[in-house]
Length: 191
Image (cartoon, rainbow, N blue to C red; front, top):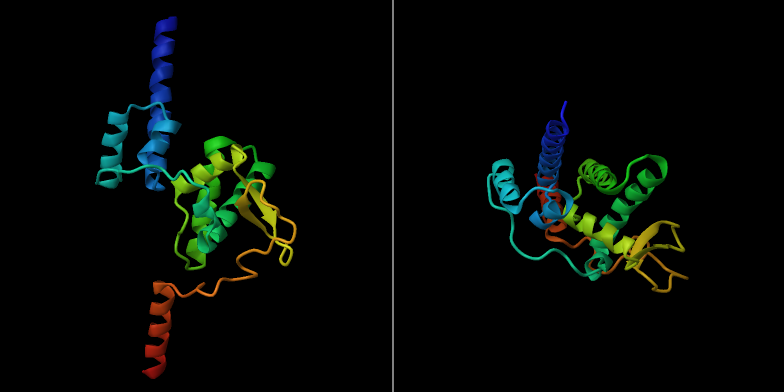
């Protein structure tokens, strides 16, 4: 087999892997910018693939660029859950990079589904958060009350840290979904 044929076959195989990866990422809700960063497919190819998989154009707009989103109560709990899976899999498997993020994100999705919770953390936010950790912009802080590890700003003091589960804000659990659930329970009780 000549070198040219081998190179051409390798590029076809590589492109097929990128297409499969892009489809998996699209099905998990990845934004176009993430697809561009993680595959070698052209923007035009990714747009076409996105439309074929989702049946619509990809959302427009910038990627999350601030660590602050991860600090608010509910996003922090979900980000911390994802990071627990990410760290566990990183220590106990051979997974690395994007494969590790995808597996940890699928575990996060399974957990939220099992518990009947809303999915607060998107794949793109999870991917961005891992990049923030890699850039030393975020760290994990250990709660002094429950010993759980929670996402916090890098270099913030962590001595005496108390997580959002041990010290819930006054508005926690007062979401529209919680109000609807309480109304449904009240209606059932009256029936």
